[in-house]
Length: 507
Length: 110
Image (cartoon, rainbow over all chains, first blue to last red; front, side, top):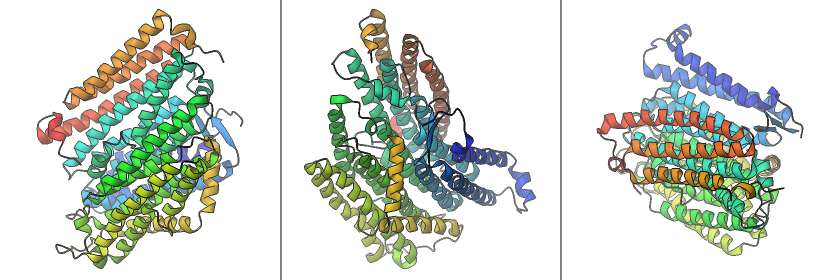
């Protein structure tokens, strides 16, 4: 690993994303003359502007991803640390960044319909989304607690605003303020933890901090650094919504616009999990404190799985149900850390699960976006009744998503869960594995219930025609994510190798 | 590796500073939990962040490097951003409901 002060090819993804942000800002500022130049008839109308903005943002973000796909591939061979121990780049980080960009692209594609139907000013929306994506990209690369904090906030603050941007719903403001206040509260804890770790070690670089921590004697220093680690864990557990730090999740997921919910539930979760893995799983210098951390992870993940899956059983609202299901999935990802064997395979399993979860959750939320139009919210189970007759394609997609989320064979969710359980069994945690397995059987009920409702129930009221506006991008996003879900379920080995490479970078 | 905390945690300055930091921080937590208006909760968060700033500056001086001070400057910036977004959302809510009490905003449950 060689220290180079600055090498732009390694940050190609971030740089091109920043360029896109600058372009979007300029277009937003000079919207009317630019759109008039390209021959839009009525520049004042929100719909027309939204259409242009969606086109620009989705093409731009795809360009960014393709750019990174081409230039980043060359950097995947070596890893370097950039900008004075702030960012790590290269190596298997490539796949993580591509996955996050993929999540961003899918979100933008499905947003084109949603911003139209909900009358959201699209340009602001895409700008905030790009900022949040930039934060997620730097968060997984962060090598330094300063960078971790900054990227975490750069990822979260735009999302606070995005949650509140849904104009037509009175609830979105409430959700936004709830998320903002609890987010600030949790980053307070994260920062207190960071300051204690800095106090005991005198450094902000993650590897230095973990390397210098000593837990040999129970003196004040060990106490302070233990406290610091616990506070850091609390701050990050909030972001991935582990029980008991999950209280915001269902309300915020329900109140936010559906594409934002999708983005929040996958990108934020994966990025925050990458940081958790970096701090807690990568190094093995916690000494005898190691098993304690393992027990903490096992305890919190297990109650997360139990709570998420059992509360999801009684939900009538699909978005709320998916919120509890995302809590449960965070629990599954955390469970892999319970053995605390510091094996690279553990990290690999979690990362694989996280990437697979991007595809399947995007698919589920994409179907909800597809079925929502101007005066028809598709959010509850009642809205889904008999939808298979009206929209057979969407119902089939939803079925695949539910199969994958439940962890049934042909989809990526199955492979992910198998990986997690293999880690648990290799760590000889049989009881934990059995409880987790039992609750994933419980989870079958509410996932299958959605399919049953779609195919076998009569609709209570006449289902309106699916609106025709901007259907193509939504179909594109659905097709992309269903392809990924099925392909990764059938041929998981390439992604498994890539996530192993990513795990090597995090170690 | 020599444990640097061994020297100062026993000293009066270390104990004093860490106690002040913790007291300030948990006053912030208590404000957040017990004051039931949105602005007070935002202020509680700010107090928590400033307690952290104090501790970072103390540790930065102790270790004779600037990492902590730089982080505390960054915290100022981020806290300002958070307040800007927060106040905007609170104003929006106030326009809709005419109050900033938390009790109004507990429609969502479950």
